[in-house]
Length: 283
Ligand SMILES: C[S@@+](CC[C@H](N)C(=O)[O-])C[C@H]1O[C@@H](n2cnc3c(N)ncnc32)[C@H](O)[C@@H]1O
Image (cartoon, rainbow, N blue to C red; front, side, top):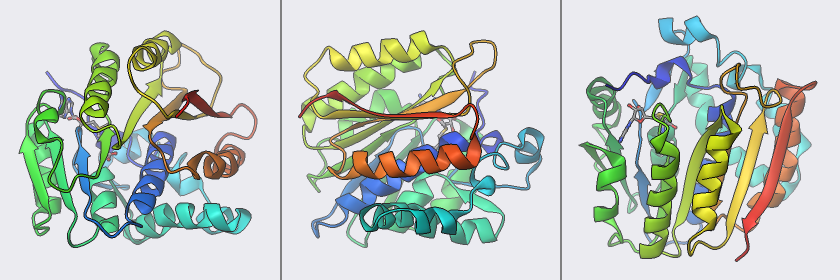
């Protein structure tokens, strides 16, 4: 039984981190002219209203994207970071003006080109029909109502030969930590050059440790961790922080995140916030 609904969380601090890193990755990957394949293993509904009952019940976007002065952040970073940060900001801004927030499929679709292709998996029927509604006019997109863990590998390697893959499960089930790591390792085995992004929540630090251990004990190289938290770890609190693990990130991304994460901390959690940029496996 799937109970996770992203509408409660859209635009929170974890989405900001995840989508900032995703847009930076896509911005870099689309510098080459050759077509790109984007795979979203857990796509969600694609788009969310920030004034919905769900969003207003948690107020998470108010403590996330809506708390940020995006223009000041852009003004505060170097030219190199500006390009990557701008890819996120200029993509979300039109939605924010309509009191909406784009999910990863729409962010990716906005950044990809005419010859690129997107494949989206979503297992929840109601989320899938919303996703279909939001993406139906885009003939670059294929959507499957199916388990992204089980079905993604069959699409790889794609004809485009270059891929960016987002693995973003809800982690309702503890197994998701291990399944995310196993899927990333198998994708990497099949496409060593693919950029693979795994999002994780910090609820119990031990679960994140198991995900990292699993990734470390394989053939993966060039693995980076980008983490941002509102509070120190606290197992009684719920999600205190979240992170993105990226295999084959753009080479400039670590420096960009070293500039952007302190700005997020300053804006969202100046007293107890924390951030981390770490190379877990060298190239
Ligand atoms: C965190 S949300 C995705 C958010 C989206 N990637 C974004 O950034 O906008 C996770 C989604 O995965 C879906 N889901 C859960 N288990 C799944 C599975 N095994 N395969 C595909 N989708 C799944 C949930 O219904 C939920 O919509």
